[in-house]
Image (cartoon, rainbow, N blue to C red):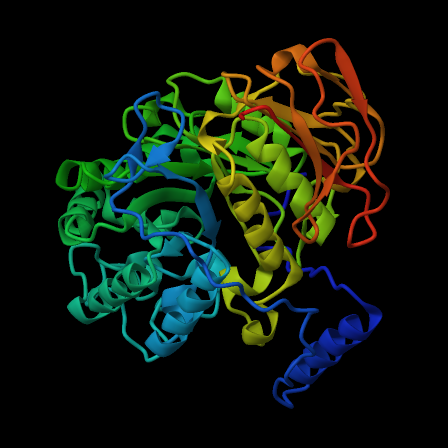
Length: 490
């Protein structure tokens, strides 16, 4: 049985019985046509103002091919949210407010924003309109009058001006916008009806229009299982090639189908894309490390995994704060150079989304971003041969291991031996090869639940032999995951 995507399975992770009851009552009222009630907010955290300087867009690939940089060659850590339905659900004031909130949390990327919202993910939006009724195209092909028969050669200027404004609002908040030109979950039939020549011309239209916006990148696909059928794959590639021919200055990537995958699974995309996204509903360290070892070498990032407030996966998991933390820290310590966070309410903008925006998961992204921003994250190399973390690793599992059940520890170090970072999803004693460090090291435990550090007695630890480390008990959230930071940089 094919694994259902998160878009099809809208089961939410509810943090408390009271909240669960609240959402059930809201759903009952909607079914009885009594109108939605404002749901009780999730335990929220106020956004923390970002102090990061504005990147000089557009982003590009670093000289060594492992991470993104801006035009000043400053490393760019991908800190993304996924507001896919933005253009179909929010007015411009709401979009501005949403971007401001995400900027305050430290998000620097929106990945991704669908140009066109219709079909499976937005099934009631028959004509893929904006909230005020603007259609994306002004005519139809012979044979039908729903979104699958839109004539791609007839873009509606008023609609694409709205997308212009979204990108401009992103720039106002120093945010990079990954645009999905024609997301395949809903628009593959439209491409089939239009054919490859029209698909390529549509891509050229988008490329010419958005090449003048510095804060743009492109993400093709979206649960795109059709890549295995060459005729369908060629249609989507035609759009991407059209964009690239008109806009070679903006990076592209592609997302294939779940429950796991890489942007390089389809080698025919290798000449088009610049970044390699990992898609995984299981342990992210397995998929991200696979991507990291692929050729050609590209920056790797966690494109999609479990979203907050949703249940997905063949072996399903809820998007709880501990699950999200595992995904995020595993990915960064397995060769990843950023991630897209997701939330049921902020990809779909379902009723009540404003009550579910400043969630524990979003606050954890801020903590994650601040932790790695304080390190030379771009230089971290995964400890694939376990020459750094030599004991206490836990069970490796496989791609079907539920994230919530995995206890595997991941580690990375900088090539100069200045830093070692290890993440343990459950408490245990671990053993570190201290000779992997260049000098005696200071040691701290980092609590990924609240961003605090605890110094470890006995430091500095000599950079020879082995050293055992045991975390200080449960973390701030009552869980047992911790990050070990060894700093020999000074």
